[in-house]
Image (cartoon, rainbow, N blue to C red; front, side, top):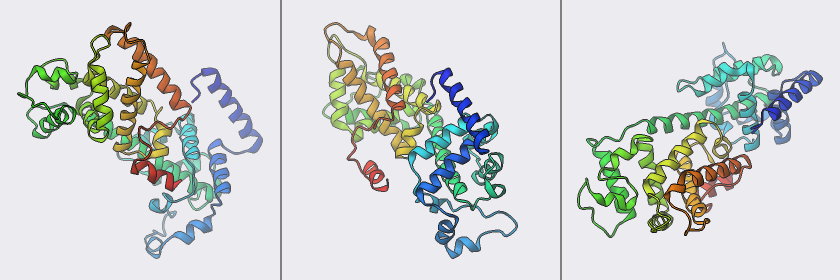
Length: 342
C-alpha cells in the first residue's frame, strides 16, 4: 500500500485535512465507523462478559477487554488492515508500534496509550464501541508480529548435524520426495537429485537455517503430488534448476514479505500461524514452477534463474497488493474454517 511516495504524501495530506474538519483522528474514525456498521455497542460487550470476567476486574484500574470474547467480534479483515496501516504511518505511534513488535508486548497498556493519544472518547475508556474495535485489531496485529518473531527465530536456527531432530527431518525430506529410492548414506551425491549442491545438504541451509528445511518438508508432506511434479519438472535437461536450492530462495522471499509487512493482509485474512505461513510458501513454490514453465523451455537455462525469479517476485508483490487469494488448496480445513468464520 502506498508504494509511491507521492501517494503516501497525498494520503497524509487528506488525513490531516479530514482531521481538522472533523476534529477526530483517522484511527478513531476507522474504529468508530466499523463499530457503527457492525452494530457494536458498549452494552453488547458488557452483556457478553461472564460473571468470572466481571469478578476479575480490579476496581482500581480501567477494566480491560476479554480477548477471547473479542475474537468473535464481527470485525472485518479490511478494518484490521486499515488499523495496521494507520498505526504504521502514524508519527505519534512509533513507540507503540515498536512495543507491538516486542516479545514482551503488554497489549492492554498499548491499547490504553493509543486510545489516549488518538483522542478516543471518554478519556480513552476501553468500554466504548470504538475501543472494542481497536483492541480487537491490536490483538490481531500483535499476533502477526508474534509469528514474525517465531519465523525469524527459526530462520536463524542453524542446521546442526549433531542434532538428531534436525537429521531426522532432513532424512524425512528425502523419503517424502523420492520414496522409492533408498539413500545410500547421510553424505551422498544422491542429494543433488533433489536439488542440493553437494554431498551434505546442511551447507545449503546456512542462509535460512532450519526454516528452509521446515518449508520443504511441509510442502512435500502436505502437497506430495505438487512437490513431486515440481521436482520432476526441475530435473529436465535444458531448463534444469535445483529443486531444494530454489525452495530455499523462495523461503528467503517469503520471509522478506513477512518482515516488510507485505504479507499482513494475508495473515489477517487467514490467521497468523506457522501453518498459514507454510501454506503461503507452498503457493509460492508451486506458482514459481508454473511461471518458469510458461517460458520457452528450449531457450532458458539456470543462468536465467535470477532474472525470471525477480520477475516472479514482482508479480507476487502485486498479487499481495491486490489482495489476491494466494492459497494452493482452498478446500483444506484451515481455509474452510476461515470461510465459515467470515
